[in-house]
Length: 323
Image (cartoon, rainbow, N blue to C red):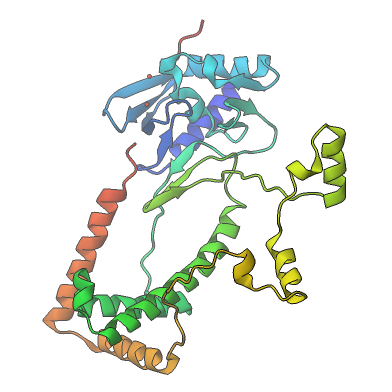
């Protein structure tokens, strides 16, 4: 395909980005933004230094040609240090993608993901609704409890208050974990090549983890013996088999176990009706409240959200010359 067509498509992709869309260089992981798209170059600005750099059309063409010459892949380590932004911008084109795990940029007929790591979503104004989720209700109750009690001095709280806090914390943790797993299942389908995806409050990626389970025990022992490892070296006492043996002997558990009693707190029951009553009271109070205290609370929430945005903004880096 002639590079002019590739270049035109790339300029269109750059033009379509939002003003705050952030990309990151694949080698140095330096964030930058595209500030200007021109006929023969793309101008970027590095977020950490504020330095601007024009990326020339000819250098993109050189990179695309090298990718094609190397069986549609190119080793990112071969790039000059100041050429790191080029593959990041080129990956906006649907035919180019970066594989950070392998350290490559490749060309494919199938559209792939780009190095766009942060693109603020455009939020439309709509009325906020209450989600039908257990974690939402428990979190609201927990927030109310935390506001009404000084949890910086737990030892000064009454026992009943501590029981309520523990119960709510336990419920929030359980329900949040359930929802977190549901969210993770969907994200697994959208993350590609361990490429981090950044959003307002954090980032996620898809690392891989190896899980092992032994094959048939006798087959394993035979394989190891054939390799010169005696089975006595890898066999050990199995606690489940010891328990079975205790049931048919007169031995006591203390004869074969080191026993230590540890005390802990466990949630024994949840008074759902009291939680629902208190929750409904909070909802009614928030819905009907127009006093200065409610207005002050809304202002505090707005200020908190603004602080969170400032604290979680992604800010974690120059021209590619043909050899």
